[in-house]
Length: 463
Ligand code: UN1
Image 1 (cartoon, helix red, strand yellow):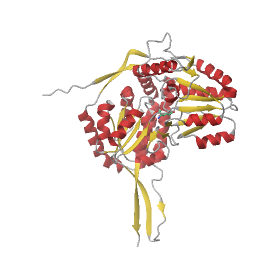
Image 2 (cartoon, helix red, strand yellow; image 1 turned 60 degrees about the horizontal axis):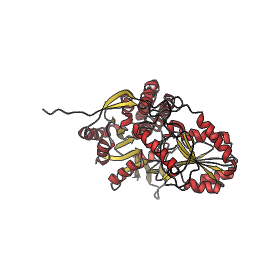
Image 3 (spheres, protein in one colour; image 1 turned 120 degrees about the vertical axis):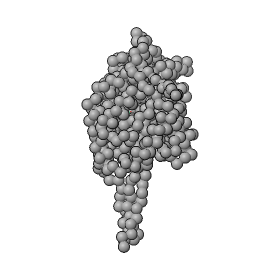
C-alpha cells in the first residue's frame, strides 16, 4: 500500500507573522489533472443549463457572500494584510460583480444580420468555450477571482480556479459558498497549489480552452512562452507604473488627496496604484506640501495594513533603499514602521528629486511608495507619463477642459482618469491596459463576453 503524503501549507498573518491563521492541503499533480478531467465532463451539462438559471446561481452567490461578509473579509484580511474595512469594500464589490454577470444570463447572446438573399435567416450565437483556467493573485482575493469566474460561468464554461497560495483560505471559502449557492459539482473547482507545479499543469493541459491570469509580468510572460503558440485564448492582466499629472490649474486639495489615496490605498499593492506624480512647476511646492500632509494622515496598522508577505516586505524595502542609493530625496517614510516590527509594516513613502531614469520612476514596486517629479508644463508631463513599458492607467488633475480631453486622447493607457485616482473598477466597465500591462480581451463589462465565448454564425435557408 502506498501512502500519499499531502503537502500542508500554513497561512500566517502578515500583521503578526507568528499567528497561524489556518492551513490548507495542497493538491498533487494527479489531483490537478483529475480536476481538469471532471471539469471537461461537467461542461456538457452546464452548457445545456439555461443561462437564466446559471445567472440565478450567481445571484444566490452574491447573497451568500453578503451574508458571510464578515468571515470572508476577516479571513482575507488576516491572510494578506489588507485592512478589514478595505476587505469589506472588496467583498461588496464582489457581490456587485456577481449581480452584474447574473443579469448577463438574460441578455442577448447574438444578433440577426441582413443576408444577400432575402430567403436566408442569418444570425450569430455566442457559445461557451469549454474548460477555463483562472489563475488569480493575492492582492484582490475576492474581486479578481469573481470578475473572472462569474462571466466564465454565466456564459456556460466550467472553471478550474487556482487562487494564489497566499490567499488559499479565502479561495477555499469562496469555493464552499459557490457550492452552497447551488453550483453543480465540478462546474467550478478550486485547486490549491503553487504556480510552478499546479499552475504549470493547468496552463499546459490540452482540455483547457482559455487561460485568464492576473499577476506579475514574469509569470504572464511564462504563460505566453508555454502556450502562446497554441490555439488557447489567453488573457493576461499584468503590472503598471501608473502616473498622475497635477497641473497648475488643478484643485490641489483634491489632487493631493486622490494622489495619495491612489498611491497608498491597499498599501500600494494594486496594479492600478499611482506610483509616479508629475507636478507642474508653478504649483510644485504647494502641491507637494499637501501631498506630504495627506500621507502623514495615514495611520499604519489602522488605516493602512501591512504588506502581504515577507517576500513583499523585503522587496519593497530593497526598492526603497535602491531609490535612496540612486539619489532620490526621501521626504516621507522610507523604512519599516517603528514600533511595529513584529509585522510587515512599511511607512507610506514619498521620494522627490526623482530623475526619470531612476528605478523608482520606472519599475513597478507594488508597495506604498510614490515618486514625485517636477515638470515645466503639461507637454513635458504627458511625454514622461507615456514613456514607460506599462499602459494600465493614468490620471490628470486639471480644471482645463482642453487639456483634460487632450490627455484622454494622448495618454497611452487602458484606463484614463480625469480628476480621479488611477485605481478602481466597476463591473459594467471594461478593465485592462495597453503595452506590457495586458494581453487579450478586456475584463468585465460587455468586453468579458468577448473572452469567455466564441461565435457561431448560423445561416438558415428558409425556402
Ligand atoms: C482596482 O484598482 O480597484 O491586480 C482594481 C490589480 C488590478 C485590479 C485593480 N487587476 O491590482
